[in-house]
Length: 246
Image 1 (cartoon, rainbow, N blue to C red):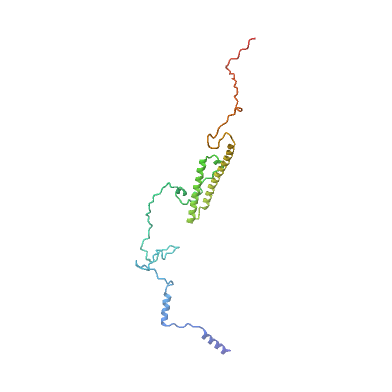
Image 2: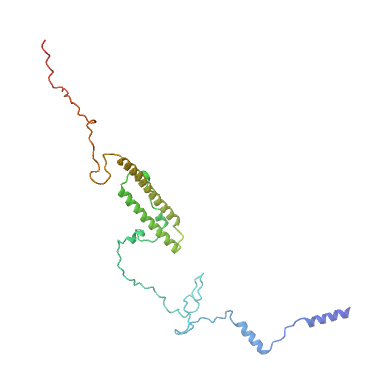
């Protein structure tokens, strides 16, 4: 038993892997590899102006969270940032052009939600029944212009991806729609009344609908209009009649 135990210990030491000593050249390479930086990209130091490997990023090495400054200068540290040109072409435009009616009065492409909430109520049918044809015509096109402005601002919100003002714009558009529906209601009522009046006039012999001559010619009926005898009424200052002699 003792012999077998000793032989097992010897075999275990022989089969255990052991680190072999490195030669002299390998020790030098290992020390160089351990001292090398983690990144394989060369450091962007300040270079000459005409270098082909020039770095044009002014914020190279600046933390996007802490906004710390550069620890060493880079290739564009001494160069100023480009400024936008302030020279705009002068174009003569007509301030009274009809295209400007599609935008707000103050020249804004998009109104704020507070400005979109500042509007009155819609016109009612009872109020519009008292208006003339010209007033209804003008009010209709005012509503059309306002709806065009609302549509223009909605398109600008979608293009710019602003993410606000959609609810206020929708409520404003709904109010304008209610006014336009009320105008249609009043005009439909007037059209029905005109049809009824046309039917009555077509059966009236005194009305001429042909468009030639007099439109209305009254017909006199002697059997209807009779001349009444008018008796004089006595006045208070008149002398009473004398009695007849007996």
